[in-house]
Each structure stands twice: as structure tokens, then as C-alpha cells.
Image (cartoon, rainbow, N blue to C red; front, side, top):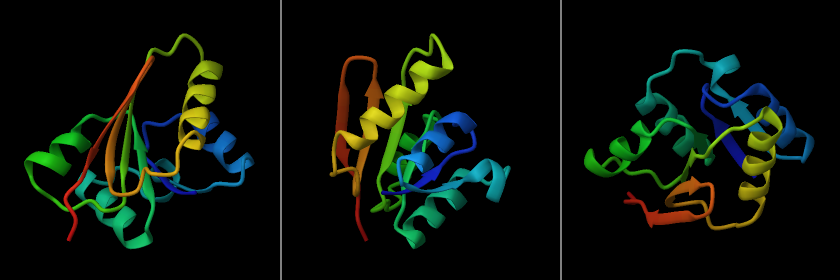
Length: 119
């Protein structure tokens, strides 16, 4: 899976996804301080799914009607330990193959998915 990890994702999550063979670009090391629109544009150009803890991506994708065919996965989970965050993110991403073109909100006990606008 081609993923663009927002800079608010822990490095341990990024490393765990890489260890599973996923192609990860991490904003924290490759483009720190990037604006959300820039991150979204890069994900679209590179055909990557954005993973983030930043709920502003929902606002950007829906209220601004900015096309986001890449897919966005927003994690809104409790984080009792770094290991639990790693496990939840990796397990969730590998549980489906339909992230592209959708905005997903991952909570502790459910995943809500809505289609995004496309160009």
C-alpha cells in the first residue's frame, strides 16, 4: 500500500508499516510543517492514502469540496500505549483494500467511510 503519513503519526507506526512492506512517505521527515492542502495534493499526485490524526482533513475534503481521490484515513482512537496505536493502525489499514477515494474515520470500535469527490 502507498501511504502518506501525516507528521502527527508516531515514528513507531511508520516503521511498523514499513516493516510490513508498505511504501510510506512520512511528512515529519520529508516535508515538515507542510500545509494540509499541500499534503493532500502530494497524496493525489503520488497516488497515496493519507493517514492522520488531524481532523482538519475532513473539513478540507468535504467543506472545501477539494477533490481527494487518494483516500484519507483519520484515526480517532484512544491511545493507552504506543504499542496499541501501532497495532490498531497496522491492523486497520491491512483489514481493507477500499481506502482509495474514501474518507474513513477509524474509532476504537468502528470504521465510518464516506466517498470523496473525484475530479
